[in-house]
Structure formats: structure tokens, C-alpha cells
Length: 80
Image 1: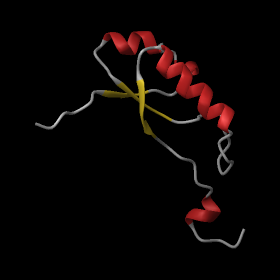
Image 2 (image 1 turned 45 degrees about the horizontal axis):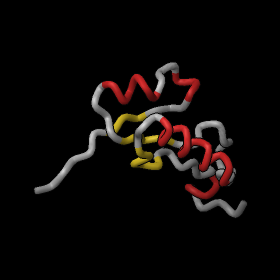
Image 3 (image 1 turned 135 degrees about the horizontal axis):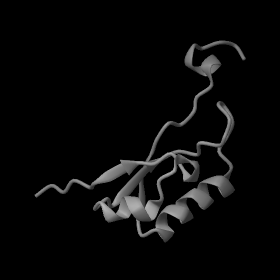
């Protein structure tokens, strides 16, 4: 039997919805990204760890890393 995990896209603390509220609707996992890291910049390990910890402290799992920002020059194969 396959098991589907209920997830919810969360845009971080500034989103206006708390993780504890999300957990109450039966969600098990969070789909999230490091929203505060500028486009094209490497996500600092501290930022990743902090987001992961915040999600886990709410009793949820960071199930999907979403919106990994890729700089436009990479998308278009530009020389920079």
C-alpha cells in the first residue's frame, strides 16, 4: 500500500500563518524554501539548519525543498 504524506507550502514566519496552526489541519510535512536568501546566492548552512529546526520543533517534517532560486543567467546559459 502506498502512503501519501499531507504537506503544506509555507513561506516562512513572515507568511502570517504559524506552523502550529498548519499542524492542526492534519499536515505532516512542509514544503519550504529559504525565502530570505537573494536570488542566485548560495543558501547558508545556518539558514537551512534554522528553517529545518523551526519546522521540526513544530512537530513537522521538511518534506520538500521548494523554489531553489536559480539566477536568470544560469537559466539562460549566459556567460556570467
